[in-house]
Length: 259
Image (cartoon, rainbow, N blue to C red):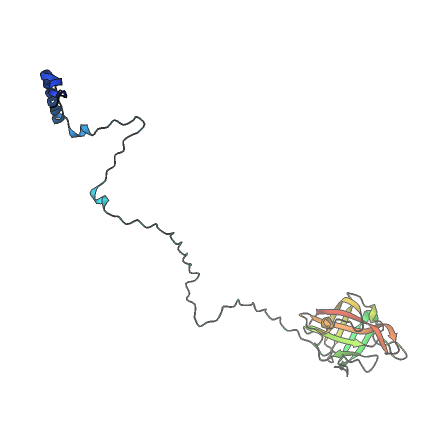
């Protein structure tokens, strides 16, 4: 036999009045949910420091889209060279050379074969021999100490170039034809005649003394655009062992009158 007292049920606790109030509350809640829009139910008040962000995503955007490749640097185009000439080059031709201006040749000047030389200011009036080279490949000298010698392998007096006449300064017992040649100075006149008596006039413009083995042969015998006449003789000290003077005297002259 169970003598334990029974617990009262909830109906006993609430009573008839409480049951009526509870049913009224449930009915009110049903009416509220039926009339309230669904969007209002999901509305949540956000804090003031957070702002809502609207994201619009279309259905097509949800598909997998391949990544856009990063464009590479665009190469700088090479400038097209501008044509320098409208004339088509010949492919078979060689490299073009710059033409060298051709010098206009000077007109020739007539020379003469000398037969006599006169230098009145120093008392020279001599017959002219013709000589070439001696055994040592040097200009030869006149056979007579009172004559002068013209180098016939060079220019004629009056031609463009250097005509050369030499003479002795002395002989074994006396002075010779060019003893006084050392007295000529720039401005001295020299007259050269051929066998027919035709004459050309030259004027001294320079005189020089050189060691016998250092005379400038190019200046004395070399080419020239002018018609020149150079006179040579010995000077300085005589060496009896070598039978030679240690210096050479040269008078340089050029044509001043050409009939």
